[in-house]
Length: 186
Image (cartoon, rainbow, N blue to C red):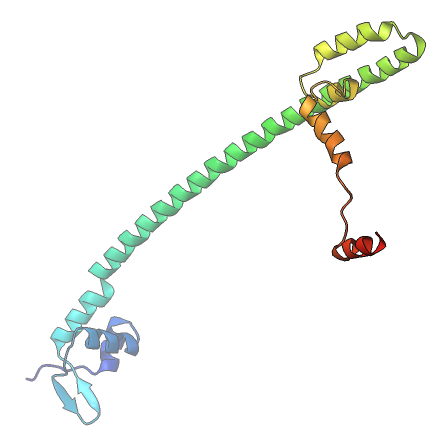
């Protein structure tokens, strides 16, 4: 009795895959039909077993794909951990900056209150202002805005004041044609 031969449709039905999958399998593995009966290509039982083995069981390609995906997943998890760590650091920095801003606002409010008290004291008792100003200066950080308001000339160098006075002596800039007009008038 002759061995049973299978068409591509029968191979696909017995394995449970589509006909295009069988065609792809036959082409990749370069399997030739045992017999051609008209337009039908017939394949042996060995081809059916080989197709069943490779299409239903995980192949080495699938294993390498899974390994590659696992590596990619690990890399993504590491990136996620790094991003989460950076986010926590940014949150910490923002909280720290909020604390610094609050502290600076409190200092500014205190300095403003003391400055207003000094201005009120200056109106009532001019001699007491020197004592209060020394106290405020001692409490203020160096180069603060309030200190610059109280003592505007402090920290201004001779060069700075000299540069201001020399700028006033510079001749006024004139346009190109104004030189000709001046020369005609002379």
